[in-house]
Length: 365
Ligand SMILES: Nc1nc2c(ncn2[C@@H]2O[C@H](COP(=O)(O)OP(=O)(O)OP(=O)(O)O)[C@@H](O)[C@H]2O)c(=O)[nH]1
Ligand SMILES: [Mg+2]
Image 1 (cartoon, rainbow, N blue to C red):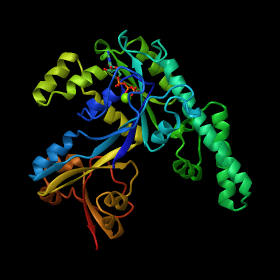
Image 2: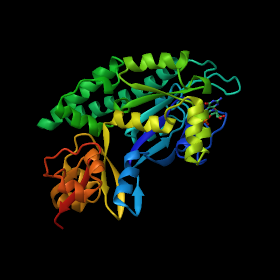
Image 3: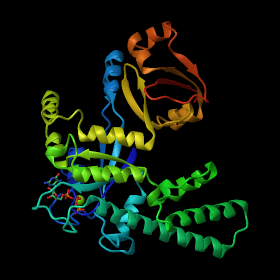
């Protein structure tokens, strides 16, 4: 499974409708009552990338395979969830499995669509959810500290872990999400393993009405300001526009529709782009007559690790990688000419793969 982005938010704000539009499916029930989602809906979305199609054309590939991103539509959360209110803990466990969170906020007015708190106030809504995530982390870190103290371990790593957990506790008690803490390298490793809910990268999605898609509205502007103070990003998406877009399969028709709405990209494209930036992800390619394929890696991935995305044998038996940049590959018109021009480099295991690189891994089996 690819990188997992969890769609979270208050009940009835449009999470499942967005999920259906993104995954071009009707698999999630979307309905005008709170808690219509109970079990999470999981769907994969192909990551659109124009470079992939260009490469495939050049290599005359039989197959073109995009990389994918996974979205998880999670049940709505209400005040008291960390204490089991609403769908409580079940919901929190679903969030724990995600790599990043897309927090949908209601920034549209429509008196026919119920708001659980009866007033449109996305800043207050965000505060409710952030508080619940914070309380859930607080509970889990307190439990872990108690366990460590009970065991009374004196080994170096146990002492370090306890110190780390106490640092996390201090942050949370001050109402600061773990994501905003400053950690040293050795603490970052522990942080990665700890899976705190407030340490996950977060993106606020302002679900605005159709007329506000270009400029946003008074609600989305407030969310934007708040996101900055929380060191997070925000994105305006009109879920109802996305719903309409998802039903258009013809490329030209889609472009025309976007043009008419004054949009330069679909919400899905914007969401994926922001998601990649947020998670520090990039894409490399493999390209030949059999297939052209995109692979997702994190920035600062060494060549053997990147090779391991394709197959563990590629990583184990890694010898070296032939590498050419996207623009060189394009201007040369393929592997052969790029080699002739001296644009194909031979890189070893210390090479950090760059976004857009076309890679050919040499390995021993
Ligand atoms: N007017 C308007 N209605 C919307 C929009 N997005 C969703 N809705 C409606 O809001 C209601 C709730 O949408 P859902 O997608 O089920 O909401 P949810 O966040 O998944 O709700 P839960 O699963 O209960 O937490 C549905 O009736 C949708 O049609 C929107 O952009 N504009
Ligand atoms: Mg739902």
